Length: 569
Image (tube, rainbow, N blue to C red; front, side):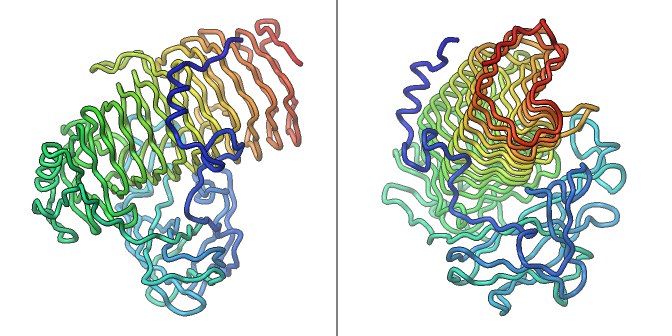
């Protein structure tokens, strides 16, 4: 087996920060984030504990498949903060309106028993309906009113408090008088100590000097575009200060840096959707349209209630030599969708409740690192590298040297935690994937007309509570599938799988062969087989040093027989 590490990958890795908590060599899995997550099911509560792995149940979309329902006045959940904090994020589900469209409600927040805030909640961007639990067709919101099969239950509300609270503070969420939603299902609370706003850099132009005004609800697009144009002309940065700025038109970037006061402080938000016939790029966020682009320290929040038309994305485009850092992107169709790009880094970003992918690195992209990002509650793959042979518009060509490292995917309600679809030297290393449904924790596939694989590595990942059931099919925690082009040079090693809902590692064939080494994986627990090779698989498979704990089926099940050259060490 040849080594799949090119000079391009080596150069990419050498340019990235190497430390004990960001390098793949450290052996830890998942993003190193500045917040602490506490799950409602592990806290002190007086409501009702919900537990389920069944699609269509609210609890099944919770990160740990457990949540707490508050229904009666006085029902509460109390969390003890492990560290100082001045902000919280609450992942919560409240009911839809009887005719759809969502409701508004509040929930009381107490600190050490004293009122701290009323948390505003709504369900305007949740509760999507379909005829069944089958495919999403073009749009997951097959119907925008109640009826049929429901999904996409949770949204997140973030709250920056008026002061810092010390470690040990007991924070309570309570249904009190005036909190009139019929029920509240709480998944978790994130506690974070948010730093002060970043000041305007000395070499930057504030957008407020070009007519943008925070918090007034007026469209600031023209002012934002003027500032971008002038900053490029002068060789300066664009600074978006603290506040909410309305953006109803996308910003095109070439040879310019845009920075904010921080993802908790500077927000770009739209109040409208583009028309169904509007541009694919949408009307929000940024389009990479050249070279030497930097975007950092911003919150981008969309208006999308579906993943199809009309489109909204946080970042799109085809950039070269770019960095996207410290971005919080939510409620868009896709967080970041880039193609025909090269030499880029996406680092320390958060993707929440986007209707499709968190990140999709699309056709003909080369040398891109996605590192230390956190995705939760998205409606397709949290992280995807997608090389599709039938794409046009200048995007023809296979991806190469794409690395997903030390990221976290939690509770995407459709798709995979990480999806790798064709390409050369594609890797997912030291990521944490939890609660992915209804497909796999990590998928390696040449489906969707993907280019062939010539080197793909899935290494050091931790995969928990993954493996879905859909299309009358059970998916593994790791799923390798070759319905189209071949998969060559595949390595699955040193991964840990716990609480798998079906087979831990599942191989499925089709038109082409699979060449795979599966070694030193730790399958702690799964309801199905440890390694399952379906009858339509062809190729060569090496199994070496894998360990098995509580396996519901066989450690190895090979239904392909001699059609697979199977070597066990």
